[in-house]
Image (cartoon, rainbow, N blue to C red):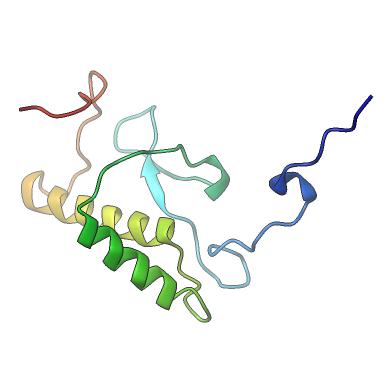
Length: 116
């Protein structure tokens, strides 16, 4: 019988969270399913996977910024950069188009692919 080799994440070594207590930061917040307008903080380990397409130059600029700011004191990751950018843009759009209130919950899943 052969032993199964442990995966990289199974070795008990994890990089420290950028939202750690030592840094005095909280994780990003999002409106989770449930009561409308109720914002809850979630732990970074519960992030759902999201695939999307970006223009090559936008992605390259984001990767360059994340790489440049990956050391102290920012310790920025590409995921954290994109989370912050999306959160800031959704907040801006809500202020502009929905009187600063959270957008209503979707009644159906988003359509996938091109709408052309």
